[in-house]
Length: 453
Ligand SMILES: Cc1ncc(COP(=O)(O)O)c(C=O)c1O
Image 1 (cartoon, rainbow, N blue to C red):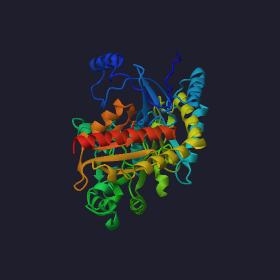
Image 2 (image 1 turned 90 degrees about the vertical axis):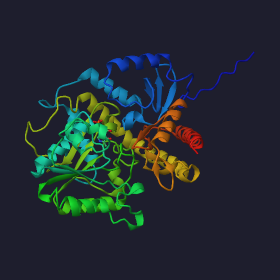
Image 3 (image 1 turned 90 degrees about the horizontal axis):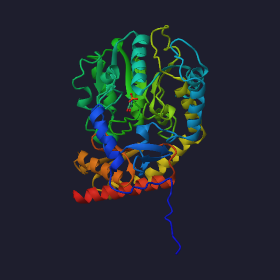
Image 4 (image 1 turned 135 degrees about the vertical axis):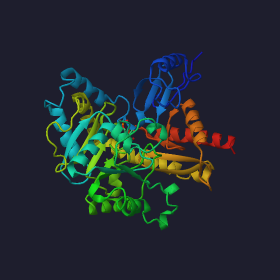
C-alpha cells in the first residue's frame, strides 16, 4: 500500500495536541517557582527554537510569530546572516567596554545610524542595552544640552521601566504603582488617539487640540518654555494600542517645539528599524526629531539601545554618560547586518506585506461588529475590539479571548492598549503567512463575536 504523507509547509504552523504540552507545563511550573512574577504572560508558549517567522515550542508545536519578540526580531528568528555575524564576532571579541576603549564595530554602527537617522542632520550616538536605557540617555542629554529640567510626555505612552523612563511612561497604573516618587518635572499631555479623541473632536474639526494643550496650558502653567527641555513622543504609540497620529499633529508639535526652543525627542524603539515600511515611522510624516531613541529591532534580538542626537547637542564631556555593556561588539555586529538586511529588502517587504494585510483587514469593522477600528503603518497594525461600535465601549475580555484562540490555532499575537490586538511580525513574513494570520484572526474574531452577540 502506498503511504501518502501529509505535505507540511515549514513556513506555516502545526499544533498537535492540547496546549501547553507536557514539557511546556514542566517549564512553566519551574518558572512560577523561581522567576519574578512581574512578567505578563498572555498564554503558555514555551519557546525552544525559531526560524524566520516560525517559533517551535518545547513540545514540537510550530507557531507563526506575529509578535516577533515584541517587535524585536526584525530580520526574523535566527536569520542566517545575523547568526553568522554573531558567531564570527563572538569568536573574535565579545567584550571590551566602550567606556574606556575603542573598537571598530561601534564606530561603524554609529556612523551608519547617523547616516540613516531622519533628516539630513549630522548625528552622534550613545549606546545602551535596551529601549529604557536609550530613553534615559535622551532625558539626560536633553537636560544637559538645554540646562532645563522639565519634560513633556504623553498619556498612554510606554517608554520603559527604569525610573527615568518610567516617569515618562503613562500607560498602566500597575507599571508605576509603589515605585514613586518618580522623576520630578515630568508632565503629560493627551496623545492624538483620534478614534477616542480626548477632546471629543472628529478628524475634520480637529484643530490639534493635543498640541494646543501643550502650547496653551502646559507651557503657560506648569512647564514654562524656559524650564522645559524636551517633548518626548512615540511616533506611533505602541504599548498604548498601536495608535497612529495624523500629519497635522507632527506639524504642530514641531512648530511648538521650535518656537519655544524645546527639543523634540522621538521614541522609535518599537516603531523604528523598518517596522512601518519606512526606516522610521516619523518618515511617513516628514518629521525630524532632535534626538531619537532606538532599540528593539536594531540588532535582531541582541540587546542594544541607542540615543541618536544632533551632533551639536551630544556634546557632553567624558564621564557624563556611558554603560559597560552598551554597544557591545557582538550586538554591534548583529545591528550592522540587521541594517544591511533592512536596506536590501526588508523595509520594502514590510511595506508590501503591511499593504496586503491592510487590504484584507480594512473592512473588518463592516464585517465584524466587535471590531471598532483597524489601523497601522506597514507591519505595525492594531485591531481595536469593542462591545458596541456605536458607543465604542472597550472590549478587553473579547480581545484576550481572540488572542488566546489564535494561540491555540498556531498564531502568536499579543494585545496592546486595553482592547487592541497588535500585529508586529518579523519583517521577513511572506504572503502565505500573512494570509494565514488574516484567516486565523477572522475565524477567531467571528467565533468570539458570535459567542458574545
Ligand atoms: C516605545 C517604547 N519605548 C521604550 C520601550 C522600552 O524598551 P525596553 O523594554 O527594551 O527597555 C518600549 C518597550 O516596549 C517601547 O515600546
